[in-house]
Image 1 (cartoon, helix red, strand yellow):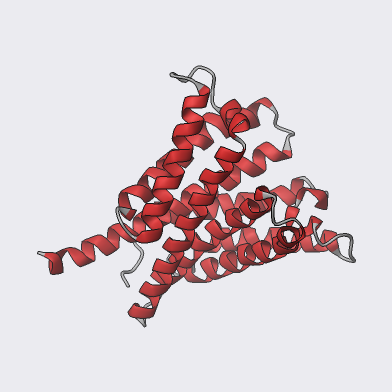
Image 2 (cartoon, one colour; image 1 turned 90 degrees about the vertical axis):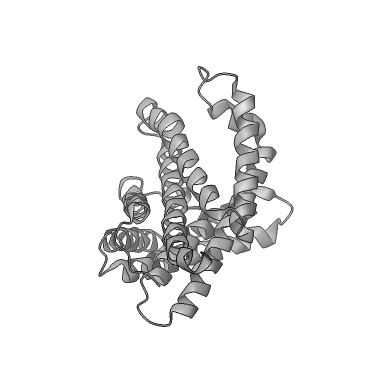
Length: 259
């Protein structure tokens, strides 16, 4: 595997992850954390929220630095995988409700980004690292197909988030971005046109952050949901960028053998 030199996606991902860790320090109520709600009330639940918060902050900081990137990726990947596992009881309780599956896929998309960083940072066993990174790409692709399903399922809400001033209309962009999620996700999952697809997803998701969630947070700074969804979107954008960084390096490395 190639070493990580220029890694803007890793910095975006890590910054968003650290910021997501800050949220529990501001909003203390465990009811905000869907990963814990399905477990019901139990001893030290509040403490668990703070532990998860500090672990995310530590992982988000560590992943910024090349020498600590692998450790940071391992920390964040483990946290988000645990979050996905904690959501499984809710899925099992009512598997017919799509949003329960989607909550898991949000976490798995972040696991995918961490897995690609972890694999890219390995100095030995390049073949195994390559397989791990490509599995991360597949997982991220499938997650994005689920995001398309979410937008179709909640199309009216998605359209309502689009700024009214954007032509040709809110519903147009809700449908267009759902199609983009589906096509880009499938391209990444099967490994065809994955590089442009990952770049497009990174750009589109950052657009969501700038056009939807930044104005929403400014308008309602005390709304936990706006900050949580905005930072989660930024983290997923960082994961898409991580894939683009990896696939770009992989393409450059493979280019001589293709000529």
